[in-house]
Image (cartoon, rainbow, N blue to C red; front, top):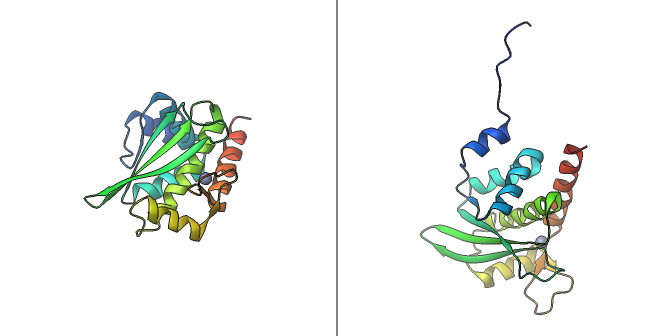
Length: 167
Ligand SMILES: [Zn+2]
């Protein structure tokens, strides 16, 4: 078919122009860049964000330079108020590039786990849920950090998506 090719924005570019993800909110330039790299380069990352956009969660994302070397990402339950549950993702500021995006995706998968569990309304119900669906993190010292297979798999898949994208 012959015709005039109209310039089209890729999904990522269009979304970057208008920041319209009210449920996932990167708070600094570094996590914002990671967020848009994930949206552009990874179908799974986009799927996780879409799930969160349809949830009662608001997830703030920020860089954290006080994180111990071994811990690169963390999900915290902040509060539940007015029918909205607030979570916070912290990403160690020592990580960058596609690793940072994969860690962000890993934590967003944890957020989806919370979205799927409406009974999680504070730190202790979140810990209960992870005792049920997850397992104790390696190197956990105070019994309060948990891991899930689904989040590990999500991070690895996002890393693969982005590695393919950069070849
Ligand atoms: Zn995890």
